[in-house]
Amino acid sequence: PDRPGVAEKILARHGPAKVVAAIESMGEPDNPGTAAPGPGHPLSIGETAKRMGFRRILYTELDRTGTRHRLNPRLLARLAVSTGLRVTVSGGVVSFDDLRDIQNLQELGVDSVVLRSSLYENNFSCQKIWRLAESGGYPFTAKV
Image 1 (cartoon, rainbow, N blue to C red):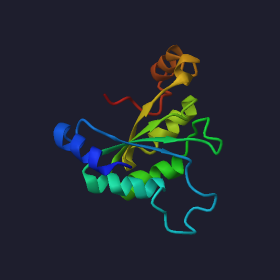
Image 2: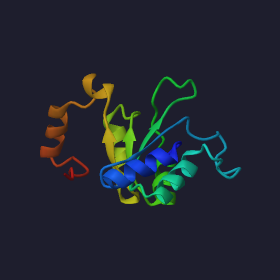
Image 3: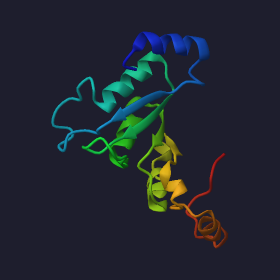
Image 4: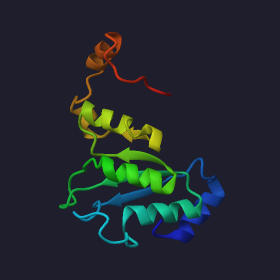
């Protein structure tokens, strides 16, 4: 929502069920909580999105170089809890363990993932996941 006028028009035309607020961030300082989040902090942007009427955030976090996606479960949890919005993780999920970390945040509102190159790199072998599910060793079931 860095252009609130445009976002408000899009929300008015299509409704909050069909539009998400995208936040791309470098995360937060190494010492989170030492100062109130500034206007460019993901939590501040999320609060703005909520006030505007968005229901969902698409969150992408980049590393300090700005070139690679990374997963930050702690910040994802804070974003979902502080805003009350649903959160979709975009990027940074590169292993099955990362999916489990996201699953642990579902009750907080982090409920979906966009898989990128890791899917094409076969980091999520469907056959392996099916075998795990069939053996009863799958810790959760997908919700569609």
